[in-house]
Image 1 (spheres, rainbow, N blue to C red):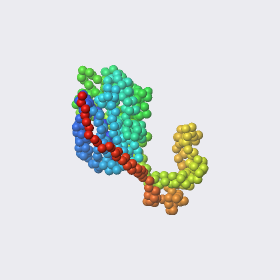
Image 2: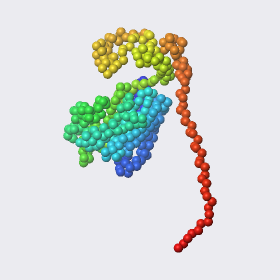
Image 3: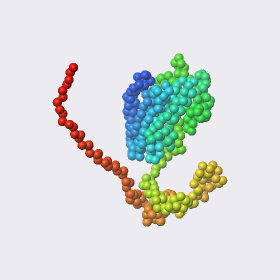
Image 4: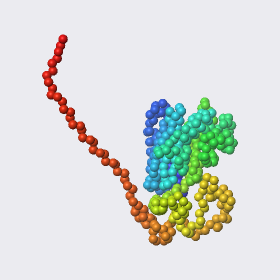
Length: 419
C-alpha cells in the first residue's frame, strides 16, 4: 500500500501473487487468466465492504506470468495525474525459457515521480542460493519497459514476492527459535540478508525490520509449521524490498491468514510526490531559449552567456548561489558543512523573509510588466510561442510518360515445312 503524504487512505494498492495457478505444463504453455480475474473481483468486493468508505478504487493495470501476477489499484480521482503505465514480464525458469519462475513489473508516473512495482518468484530449494541470485540478476538486468527503461530508471522501486531465500540452520533449531520469538538469532543465518550484505543480490535495496515469525511453511489451514514427510525448515521466503529517497516504510508485517501454506506479508509506504508546474516550466524554457537565440556571435561560448542566463533566472533578492558542481567539487560538501551536514544552529542564520519560489519573475522580467507574474500571464505568454512547423511531405515528381509503342511489320502467311 502506498500513501502520498497527508493522505488518509492509500493512493495505490500493489498486490502480488505467486502460484496463483498450478504450475503444470499446460499452464506454462497457455496460462489461464481466470484465477487472476477472480482475485480482482474479490479484492474490489472487499474494498467496497470496508467501513467508513470515503473513496473508490479502479483497476489501473494487472499482468500475469503463469503463476506470478501483479495487480495495481489506484484511487479513482488520481487517474488524471497517473500516466505512462506499462507492464512487462521476465522469465527465469529453465534458463529463461519457462515462466514457472520469473517476475512481473508494472511502472507508472504519479504526477512527476516514477514508480516501479515488481513481484517475483525465484528458484526454490533450500540450498539453491546461487540459482536465486542468478534469477535476481536476470530480472534486474533483463526486465525492460518501452523506450529502454529499466528497473533502475525509476525514482522509486518496490519488490514484493516469494524470494525463496531460506535460513541456514538445522530444522529443530529454527523451529525452537521461532517458537521463542528469538528472531535476531534466525536473521543472522538468513540467506537473503547475507546476500544483501555481500552485494550479491538486491544491492542498494532496503528491507524494513523483520518483527514477525518466518512465513514458510505451514500446514494448510493451520498455524503449525510443516509436519509432512519433507518437514521443510521454516524461513522468511516472502519479502518486500525497496529503494527510493521519497519512500518511507511505516509498517512491515505479515497477515495471519490460513488460506495458504505461506503467511502473506504486507507493507505500508508513504511517499513524497514531485509536482512540476508545466506552465511556468514552459514559460521559463522560452525565456532561456530567447536569451540564447538573441545572443550575438561570440557571446554564446563565453562566460557572458552564463552570467546572462543566471541573471534572467534568479531575482535579485535571492542570496548568492554557490558555483556549479563538478566531478571533483560539489557545493554541499565544504569545510563549513563536511559531507553536506548542516549543524542545527546554522538554521537560525538562514534568512526566512524572502520569496519562497526562486522562479518568481522579478520586476524587470520580460514575462510581465507587473511586479509578479500570475499563472494566467505565464500561460498567455506561453501560448504566444510560435507553432512548430509541421514537416511537409515532398511532392513526388510525376512519372515519365510511357515510351511510344514500337511499330511491327505486317504479318504474312506462314508456311510450315515437313520432311
